[in-house]
Length: 341
Ligand SMILES: NC(=O)c1ccc[n+]([C@@H]2O[C@H](COP(=O)([O-])OP(=O)(O)OC[C@H]3O[C@@H](n4cnc5c(N)ncnc54)[C@H](OP(=O)(O)O)[C@@H]3O)[C@@H](O)[C@H]2O)c1
Image 1 (tube, helix red, strand yellow):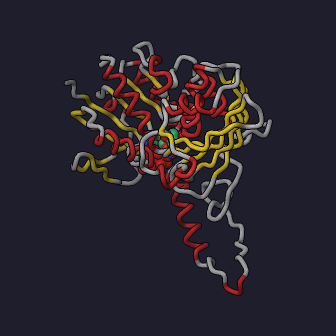
Image 2 (cartoon, helix red, strand yellow):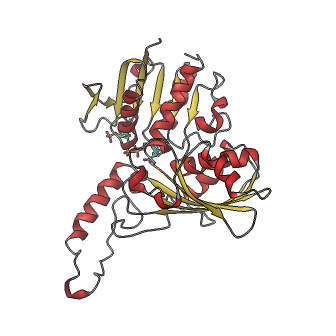
């Protein structure tokens, strides 16, 4: 069996640590691990019982690897990923730097693994909100055709990275002091500023994930629409999204309304959806807590919408796992399975 030299850029981040966990758990055949971080703090990493240090990124060192995962930021990926891929190194990028680039395949292995080929050594993983819908709705789209989608997301704080999670902890600790029904009234908490999020997230919910464009659409809402069209190869798909941040730690949930090209029975819809997801019945519907730490996309509450053409479903998955780290590891496994290394 091949044994590979593997680099992880952003190894100390929320996704980076999950990525290392899954490389180890799935026994990815690596002989050497090369970890990078901002280099500003000296954080240790444990992998297969050994301690590694995550050093500042170094191009000349990094180019000794055969596969490099980028789980850092758009800026870091934009600066280095193409240069490394040009040397023949397989680069799997979880940032949004190349997702819109027509020359870079955007891959969810359950949907379009045939896009992985030596024609492009640089491969992008999609946005964590889109992945749940991309997997859950794909068979419906393939067999019946999906014409329109309406989507509401309920996105956990870890989707915004470690600094946002630190904010969530700090804000919640402060609010806890006022969590009591003294005098019988529900406390009216003071609005404060959040350090890394657009609004305070403790005991709050807000309809903004990313910056708004001139049309009032948030960055996340545009990404979901663009990336779903790309992964499904459905340039004319109509999609309308409201992306909402909620005070949960990990696990994104979606309410999705799919308008199909022709009516089908709920039984048939369920059969198609369950081909690529973990189906739960209406009484054991998935939640952020129930899917935290687990692989896969969970679906339940499949029902008829307001017309015979519309199917409504509830989707949940761990944004750090299938929404990021696991998807990247699956791409790497596919590269090996196809014998491209
Ligand atoms: N969070 C999610 O659910 C999710 C889902 C899909 C995709 N993604 C994408 O995955 C990437 C990582 O997200 P995250 O949530 O893990 O972020 P994070 O928790 O903020 O971690 C960022 C990582 O990047 C490192 N870093 C910062 N500057 C660097 C530099 N100049 N060179 C090398 N490494 C540097 C950080 O190192 P230090 O520890 O030294 O700061 C840290 O390891 C982002 O591109 C994000 O868009 C995230």
